[in-house]
Image (cartoon, rainbow, N blue to C red; front, side, top):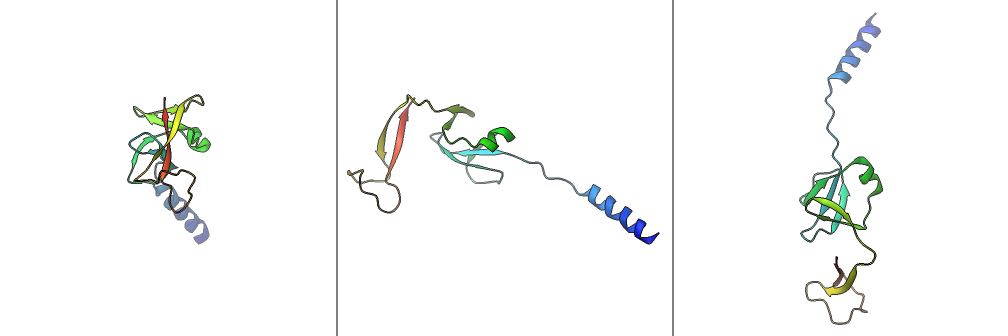
Length: 104
Protein backbone atom coordinates (compact mmCIF):
# COMPACT_ATOMS: atom_id res chain seq x y z
CA UNK A 1 0.00 0.00 0.00
CA UNK A 2 2.90 2.35 0.62
CA UNK A 3 4.00 2.04 -3.03
CA UNK A 4 0.54 3.10 -4.18
CA UNK A 5 0.59 6.03 -1.74
CA UNK A 6 3.98 7.15 -3.06
CA UNK A 7 2.70 6.87 -6.61
CA UNK A 8 -0.39 8.93 -5.80
CA UNK A 9 1.74 11.60 -4.15
CA UNK A 10 4.07 11.68 -7.16
CA UNK A 11 1.10 12.14 -9.52
CA UNK A 12 -0.21 15.02 -7.37
CA UNK A 13 3.22 16.69 -7.45
CA UNK A 14 3.48 16.37 -11.23
CA UNK A 15 -0.02 17.80 -11.67
CA UNK A 16 0.80 20.75 -9.41
CA UNK A 17 3.85 21.78 -11.48
CA UNK A 18 2.89 24.81 -13.52
CA UNK A 19 3.92 24.82 -17.16
CA UNK A 20 5.73 27.86 -18.52
CA UNK A 21 3.94 29.33 -21.52
CA UNK A 22 5.78 28.84 -24.79
CA UNK A 23 6.56 31.99 -26.78
CA UNK A 24 7.88 31.97 -30.31
CA UNK A 25 9.62 35.22 -31.14
CA UNK A 26 11.14 36.86 -34.18
CA UNK A 27 13.79 39.40 -33.15
CA UNK A 28 14.63 42.27 -35.50
CA UNK A 29 16.63 45.50 -35.62
CA UNK A 30 15.52 49.12 -36.21
CA UNK A 31 15.57 48.64 -40.02
CA UNK A 32 13.31 45.58 -39.75
CA UNK A 33 16.08 43.10 -40.63
CA UNK A 34 15.90 39.72 -38.92
CA UNK A 35 18.31 39.13 -36.03
CA UNK A 36 17.10 35.67 -35.05
CA UNK A 37 14.18 33.41 -34.25
CA UNK A 38 14.18 32.37 -30.59
CA UNK A 39 12.11 31.12 -27.66
CA UNK A 40 14.36 32.99 -25.24
CA UNK A 41 13.92 36.47 -23.78
CA UNK A 42 16.56 38.63 -25.52
CA UNK A 43 17.25 42.38 -25.38
CA UNK A 44 16.00 43.21 -28.89
CA UNK A 45 12.72 44.28 -30.45
CA UNK A 46 10.52 41.30 -31.30
CA UNK A 47 7.14 40.17 -32.49
CA UNK A 48 5.42 36.99 -31.37
CA UNK A 49 4.90 34.47 -34.15
CA UNK A 50 3.16 31.13 -34.60
CA UNK A 51 4.78 27.75 -34.10
CA UNK A 52 4.61 27.16 -37.86
CA UNK A 53 6.43 30.42 -38.64
CA UNK A 54 9.02 29.53 -36.00
CA UNK A 55 9.53 26.06 -37.51
CA UNK A 56 10.10 27.56 -40.97
CA UNK A 57 12.38 30.36 -39.65
CA UNK A 58 12.42 32.11 -43.02
CA UNK A 59 15.31 34.60 -43.25
CA UNK A 60 13.92 36.11 -46.50
CA UNK A 61 11.50 38.32 -44.58
CA UNK A 62 11.55 41.67 -42.82
CA UNK A 63 9.41 43.30 -40.13
CA UNK A 64 7.43 46.46 -40.82
CA UNK A 65 4.63 47.83 -38.61
CA UNK A 66 4.95 44.74 -36.37
CA UNK A 67 4.10 42.43 -39.28
CA UNK A 68 6.20 39.97 -41.26
CA UNK A 69 6.67 40.84 -44.93
CA UNK A 70 8.34 38.62 -47.51
CA UNK A 71 11.27 40.18 -49.37
CA UNK A 72 10.61 40.54 -53.07
CA UNK A 73 13.19 38.95 -55.31
CA UNK A 74 12.77 41.87 -57.64
CA UNK A 75 13.82 44.34 -54.92
CA UNK A 76 16.59 46.67 -55.98
CA UNK A 77 19.56 46.65 -53.66
CA UNK A 78 23.14 47.69 -53.31
CA UNK A 79 26.03 47.16 -50.94
CA UNK A 80 26.48 49.98 -48.44
CA UNK A 81 29.35 50.43 -45.95
CA UNK A 82 28.90 49.74 -42.26
CA UNK A 83 30.93 51.69 -39.70
CA UNK A 84 33.47 53.10 -42.12
CA UNK A 85 33.85 50.11 -44.42
CA UNK A 86 36.58 50.31 -47.02
CA UNK A 87 35.88 51.49 -50.57
CA UNK A 88 36.93 48.10 -51.93
CA UNK A 89 34.10 45.61 -51.43
CA UNK A 90 36.32 42.72 -52.62
CA UNK A 91 38.45 42.84 -49.43
CA UNK A 92 37.30 40.11 -47.07
CA UNK A 93 38.98 40.38 -43.68
CA UNK A 94 37.68 40.47 -40.13
CA UNK A 95 34.09 41.38 -39.46
CA UNK A 96 31.77 42.47 -42.29
CA UNK A 97 32.15 46.08 -43.41
CA UNK A 98 29.28 46.01 -45.89
CA UNK A 99 25.61 45.05 -45.89
CA UNK A 100 22.96 44.76 -48.57
CA UNK A 101 20.45 47.62 -48.53
CA UNK A 102 17.22 46.90 -50.38
CA UNK A 103 14.72 49.39 -51.70
CA UNK A 104 11.22 47.92 -51.53
